[in-house]
Length: 552
Image 1: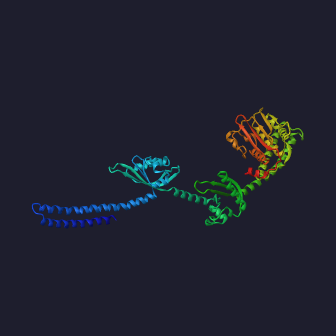
Image 2: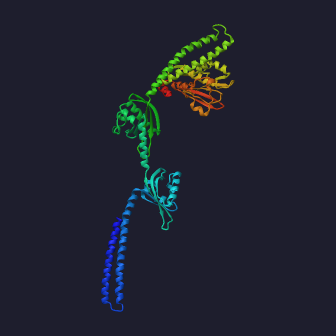
Image 3: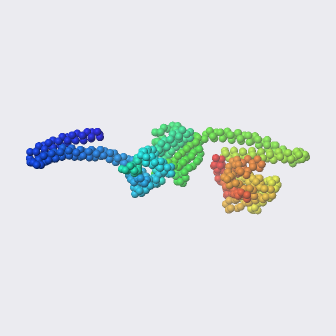
């Protein structure tokens, strides 16, 4: 296009030159014949020279200006179009924003009044972005154009990721004048790429993944495993909602869990369910996104294999424990008879060895009983024999039954609050089991000649029983593990003190199964108090659900 413009200028210049020459010759001829001496020659020559020289010059200047205007017009139009679709800002030689376009205002949330004259660093996202800008500026001052990604901060503090071209600006004298930047918003593109990578990763998971719209309960995403389970493809599930699933009971559980999260403001919940005959661990995450539709991320983990494995292991442990308990009971009983000298006197050395064997037989029986109880809890099969009992009498009975412990550890055990009857409906054997565990632990961790208090409090509708010792206390960092199975505490020497690490977890299951609560208070160097609270009223609670929750 530029070459055509030059050709037009050259053509018109030749025409102007010929016209000027023709006009000069004509004037010279007329003037020579009209004007008389002595100025005839000057009057003819000077205007002729003017016509010959000035006319082509005037024509060339006019055409040149017209050509420049014509060449600038498309460029101006292109810059205007560019400015409507690209974020543009100009920075002066003091590194302040000198000019921004409307796209800049839309993308960043700042108005021109808020940014013009301000340091350009105010729109950098972080120190890393500022460091990059310093390096870019160094290159620009050397006349180098820069292209790449830049991280800007919107007015609301969020990230604006842009693909940027920065061109240096120089003044007429060659001094540094600043720069002009043209930017394309890449934030959404990067988000889409990240979402695509996430989807591809979710598709590879073995777990079933659902994403459900919170308002319509329609599926917006199912991974490959979930689609295979329902026999759907992408086009099919996009037309489906939770209500279209065949298993109504499971769907109701999921829908209620989702609505509960939305109502309470919580973000995560876990539970177990059976969907289409398959047991799952279900996790639901409430995805709350500003200015967008809220969604639920539902992950279902098939636990069929795990449950089968646990069932086989439980059956094996239960079988072994039962097979061991019968012979051990016979061995323990026989040794008890020998120790009572039912078979005659026994030499002192043999008696000492027999006592050691008897104590260890006791320990083995307790371990086996704990294991069997644990299996009952895991299977939700622990049964309670509810009776109307006097809790004060149960506490005194437990204290008498553990007299050997008091003597063995040389401890002073005192009762408080058992001087009057306290009636309630509960399982007496299970309560004694819990009390015995509390008392046994208190004795094991107490110093010789120290004191243990067993206190019973009437709380009106409830009764509280507490066992306090003067032992070393439970380290604060271990207290959260107290009721866990096989809890291993810092100051717990299981080898020396005995026990399986199951006792307190079993106690917790028993008390909660009886409708009560269990807890402890401890201070290092001072002692520990374990307690449980049971309701006085008629026990009408379904313990099965509680035991299943404790087991899980």
